[in-house]
Length: 73
Image (cartoon, rainbow, N blue to C red; front, side):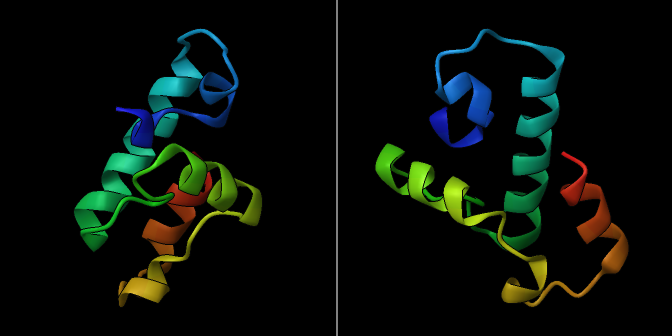
C-alpha cells in the first residue's frame, strides 16, 4: 500500500530495510491514532511528506516515548 511506502520508495527507489522501518512506523501510527500518518491518496501523501510528520498529540496520544520512537523512523 502506497500509504506505508517510505519517501525514497515513492520517488522510485528500491525496497530496503529503511523502507521496512518506515512502514512499521506508519503502521504503528495508524494503530495508535486510527489515521494514516500522511493520508490516503498519492497527491495528499506527497504534500504531507513535505510538511513534515504529524504529531501523535494531534490525535490525543500524549506519550513522549512513543513520539520519540516514531520520530526515529
